[in-house]
Image 1 (cartoon, helix red, strand yellow):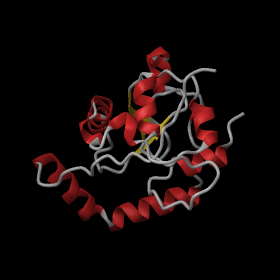
Image 2: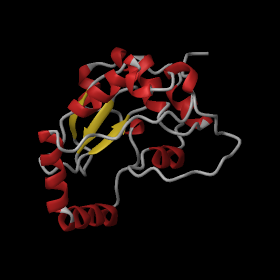
Image 3: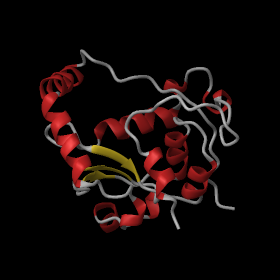
Length: 179
């Protein structure tokens, strides 16, 4: 059974500093070297994430399912775009966040390339965070409307190359291989 509290924390769109705890591992510069942006796995992952289709207003949620399939979703969790990732790219994605043993266990053995395209577009709800409440949806819609001009300007700047994406920061060294 998936612990949705951990899953929901994992899928938050804003990363907040997390104090060190027993589940946190040190940064893994060994695998990726001193310039993780140049590592082939991180480059490939960044390219895939950048090319996933989003909503026309740029507000779609990005969710990595525990099946190894990243998806962009509408506010009602309809899938906009999806692609199955091999284990090495799932690991590359997870390594961008602080280590959490529960997350590692949830993704253990995941291989998005073995997931059928039908499941990309109609994932089992257990693979996704819990559905948003009416209050959460209202807050998202209100916030997006209040920031509509900023969002559209940032989309335009990204498309023109004026605004560059943030670089990759490696925070952990996950091992999701089957046991």
